Length: 113
Image 1 (cartoon, rainbow, N blue to C red):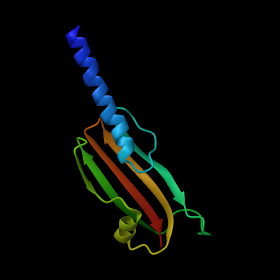
Image 2: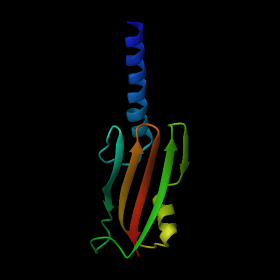
Image 3: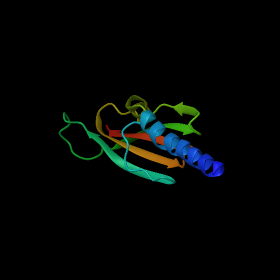
Image 4: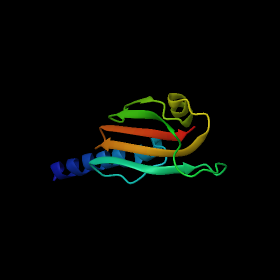
């Protein structure tokens, strides 16, 4: 009986850390898998831009979280623009990858001129 309660308690902690914690840290999120995730999903198309579709340049910026304890990186739009020397942003998309609650990355993908 004690062992079953311990297993349930540990499972609850794992689910809490892998779900709620990720949501609180994350930028806009797409669909997630419980064990593995590798998805790209749309962000914004800027309304003041008359041209549709991605621009000729693409910049990326990422943030990584390890074990839910260590977080490093900068996935801001500004950093992604600097990476590709983009002056006029057309689209902003996001990529998310994760493995269990051990490793997560969030990438902002900016295209423009």
